[in-house]
Image 1: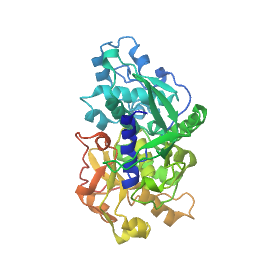
Image 2: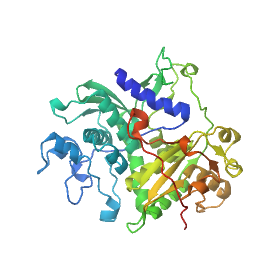
Image 3: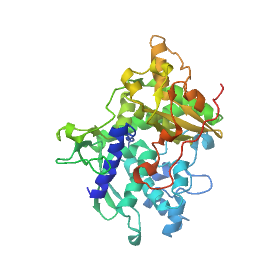
Image 4: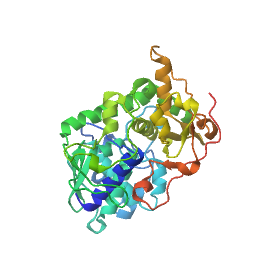
Length: 410
């Protein structure tokens, strides 16, 4: 693994352990013919790498192919009445952010396509004169990971120019002699990856859960806010949840080099187990489902907030004193709302643990800024959008958390 790739992982894991922000993960199953992916009504999908480029009528000019990567994927449930899982769907907010770097989006889709098919190698379909720099590949890898948890279930190592090896669900260990960098990060190395057959089983369960859940809950006639509320309620009913009290700081010296720090693909594994042990992964599952139905979802961390007495009734004293909390802001039907699936789940379990078939009360869904402050007070300057590529690769035009002016009325 090159030093640049090591820096990429260092940045990600610095945020994971020092702020409890991002724990990206993975998903998927058997080989898929690219012709099976959803195709836009007015354009052929050319985003699946070499296969897409070979389709009749697709220009061979690389600049045109890169521009095609910026075209939104179809919203299958709206267009055909039934949701079809799409591993290469990049959310619109990222297409906007990378409008001047379409090659990054194209490569991110190639990566997602390869992982979806549990390939052991990826050979990027780029002309010789368009070879990717390591920084560009890092950006594409981060974009893929933020778009779909499958990309965070892999470790990627360069073989030669534009060719990379993929290892699935590895564990990460602090490298021997690793020291904290100027960022406050440290170097990790991956080991103990699993076979492609084992990985495919995790991916199939993840894909099946997303497909079954969306098709069971969502109607093509639903508004965005109705869709978001239905998916929110379903994951709260489906998943077990425990709020683990972790440390908000991390010292690599406290870990033995023979003990794993973290294992890749935690969101996918959590879905397979139907059990989550922290608000981060639970939020990421909700973000992914919203991405797949084309609803804007911002994963929010407030790092200098205060739980109110009402909030403290649901979390432990240590969590309440930590001043960190994570939730989602959704953009639905032209308005923005706070949604806190973790707090909703804690309230649901507290109230209805002995009530079969109970529905969540949605006390923490569709909140305004004012209502959000009823349980967790925060300053806007302390808010960070975790699923913003600029956090990892900056500098750049980062995504700003919008104001949520009103609460949704059911």
